[in-house]
Image (tube, one colour):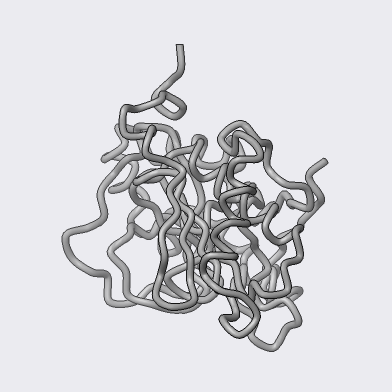
Length: 255
C-alpha cells in the first residue's frame, strides 16, 4: 500500500497541467502542493527540456512541484511551444521517471544548538524530540534540494519525516546570519545571506550559497542531495578561514 508520500489522491487526475504565464511563459505543474512524486517529476521534466536543446526556450526553472519555461516570441509562438511540451509530457510517466544524472551529494559541516542554533530546542520540542534526538534525525540521511528560490541560491531541502511538519513562527526573527540552517514544514534551508525569517534557527554552517562573482553563482542545484555533518562550535571558524565559500563542505557525484 502506498504511504502518505506516494499515495495517489483524487485531485492527482488533473495533473500534469499546462498553463500560460503572461505572454512568453508556460508552467507545467505536477501537483497542487509539494509531495515527493511531484517534485521528482518536476526535476526530471526540467532536465528533459534542457536536454532537448530547444533554441527558442530562453529559460527554465523548477519549483517545488512545477516547471516554468520562458520562450522567445520572435523565434516561435505559443501554439508551437505548447505542442512540443505536450508531446514531451505524453512521452512517459514523469512520476515514475528517475532523477536525472549529474546530481551531487554535498556534506556540509554544521554546528547545532547553542548560540549557533538558538531555536534547536524549541523546534525539537515541536517535533516531539529532545535536542540530541533532533540532531541525530536531521543528520542521519541526506535531504534533497527540492528547489532554489525566494532569494538567490536559497535551497529548500527535504522532505523530512512527518514529525517535522512544524509550523513557521508567528513572529519574525529580525536577523539570522548567512549560512544559518533553519527548519519548518518538513524542510530545511541554508540562508545564503543574513536575513529576517519566520523559520527556526537550529544550526550554523560556513556554506555560501550565493556566489555572484563565480561562473556558477548557485553551487546547489535542484536534485542535489545534502547531508549535514555535526561539528563542534570551535571547528567552524577554522573551516571558514580555510575555505570561505564552502566552510568545509565537499561534494561528490551521485552514481
